[in-house]
Image (cartoon, rainbow, N blue to C red; front, side, top):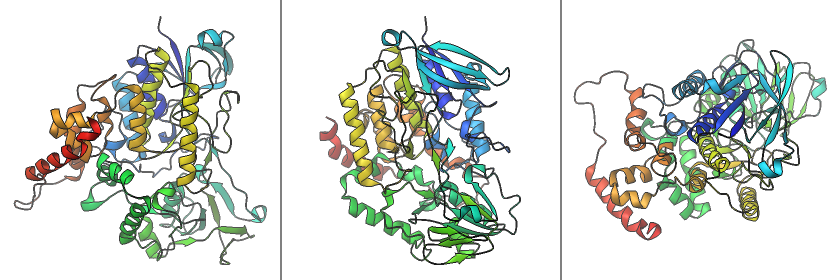
Length: 533
């Protein structure tokens, strides 16, 4: 009899959790408290308490080849950076392709998750479930639980001196939907993360916006050299190898120089003290242009609110402010789970690979997608699910409790050494490194050295090209026959949506260089042979 697995949430993590359960012949039951799938990417005009969603204009920061699920490429016709409606449509396509929706129960909220009376023997859990349509509560027993509620949950609302005296409107960025109602207004946005940057840039087109930042930030572009998507060029094993081999200060100076070549951060009042990798990056292509027009002005940290404006720590004041928007992030937690199982304190939580509570005698409860990657979260959540379902099934073993705690403490120490201290930097991971960590446990980590010998073209693509999710379907559990073709055609799918009209004869150039590829292959084999063999 198949094990029954409860999945809490039908966002991107919940959807891939359902599929991974089906792949391992487990029986999934997904509970979604709203009336639709997509989670954060299911835009609604109405503000829903403790239910974050994107802005109406939100475009994703990661390109399609790096954000897709590993056995379901995004169509070549889709733009590289998709509008939120297109992201949602992709999730819907994924759900339809693998027949996932029949396993989702909408308008069902989980009130509590508790160990069953026989947990010590079976690892089972009792879930109290509320049906919002019938307003009735029921309790059901499951063999395992996958918590897929994400980390954009409750608003982190900061208090500022004089806030109660301010006569204008104050709201959190979670409650911001679009620019309607802000035409001609003077707005202060507090917080220079991705939400704050997007809100400030959008409102600067219809009013006067001020963006307050405590530390400054490094601003990254979606688009890089020759108009190619930045993560497609930079999220590579080649760059990752250099990053780990090069002294941190040297690498940081190189990156700072490159970023300042495009945008002089000091001139634009954005220059932070910290290094490029010490804070989650702000990705915004339009911010420099809006600053250059004067409709967006960068301001220092807030000192206090006045009745009609804001005073900043540098002594400057902006008066006649109509609206203040707090882009101050989120507080995540799992209020339906007893703190003896998972205890979140100021966005800090102790879980092995950010998913397994290490002290549980039976590893039958996991958290999926509770991490903040330098890159896309969808493939990471998928690999977490592939690992979790194999652990539930008993065909994959985790390290000992002591080894798990050692890994947790090591990550904690590395994060403290690298990042500026902030409630925002508690679940940070690097995309390639963490994908490799998870895939090592699953048994599907690509063997680059072997690929270079038996399939040089594929090996070169995997090492020098983008570390696309398809690489983790080349071998091991969950191997997909279409993985090689998906990797070999990823550049074609990336380029396709740019080519919207034919060019005159003689203007097209070829990007192929067989001699260079041969030289790279020889050099790479010589360098890596000792590492992999």
